[in-house]
Length: 325
Image (cartoon, rainbow, N blue to C red; front, side, top):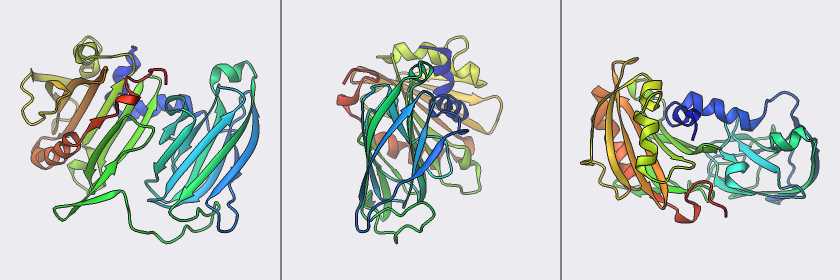
């Protein structure tokens, strides 16, 4: 495990910066529109890349649709990522998730399916022939620049006590949980592990800075394996200017089977913010969760965090991170 993991486990900006290494620079990427035949919901693309060549296949889809992408290639060093509208932060990274993606789309707009060779293969000027199959269900995707079809009912929500809670259950990701309709989630991965960041939809108050960050570090099996990277020199706390306020094995409000220890902290750089770090393990995988929130709004934040963590389950067939499939 490296010092980079510490940053990834804590700060969203650093997480994004690390992912950028896997996503390639935007310059020089060739864009190719994906066209569906009239009435069809699937397209098959045959292509070839060589060296540092990268291709973005672009299609417009709407929030709530399910996108399925499969890649068959002559070179196992070729992968694809899925990038959401207006962002270079992937919602799926092939080097972590493999050659198959299936997931419900979080927003409407132009999605990019980025096909590339990993840097080592690109430096060797290797090539790859591939077949890319793209399918969008629950309505037909529009071509880039066209309007998507009218929105249908979101089948990924469940009614609960008058409030609609979303389900997060992406086939290629190792967790499943529920979260309030007032929040949003971004799940992603890198060579350091898999992360899932739950934030509130903008509301114009201090909760805009709050987050629930679930991180499954690659190469760590137990809570003890991960603890040094949290509390040790140059660890998670120190790197972020967070002061440890205490720790306990009494998990209190977080009585999940995977939790082993709860560490409380304050933010020396932002006095209004405090947090907790939950360390635990499941299916041979260390689990780290950061709860970061305004001290004066702890009840509202923790009520939402308890829903996410109370419904959190781990997919044993996808753990530990990095296990050969």
